[in-house]
Length: 190
Image 1 (tube, one colour):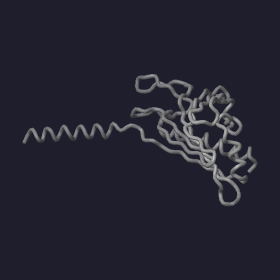
Image 2: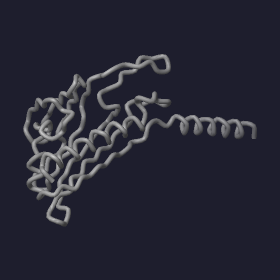
Image 3: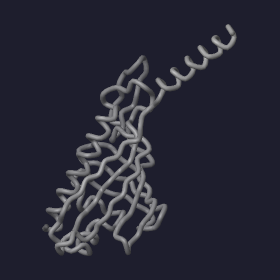
Image 4: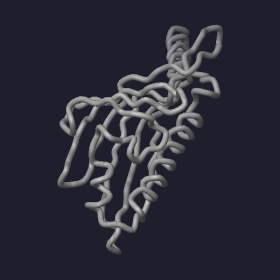
């Protein structure tokens, strides 16, 4: 009986330690904008994977290879010395006016001390980032642009520093999406 109680205690301790060791959860951000212009006009502005600086104001320049083919790459240089982000095109559907991409690499903008270690803080405080951008009719002759992403916070271990927690990740991505979509609306004229 003592062996059963001992084994049960060990099992409970193991379960509690595994449950409390849960790392970050994947989060999602989705932003939309309604534009008073036909979908084809809006799509023409955003469809080229290699020219995001034409509508996303935080981008200074884009260096790309591969056009709009799956596997194409681009390196985005942010304005004001904000660093670089490398991305890969994962899917491209011209007929559906949508594409998806993932971040493959980002430059470090600073380092912080956390739990006795030096931790890099990247341009966006995220990991495993994948995003989708699409244009669809909004039912009144205009367009609805949807930009969404799924990702993890920038610090994958437990007890993340404030600069790399879920709130920081969601805030940074939301800010970029809102700024980009708002500017897209101005650029297209809707």
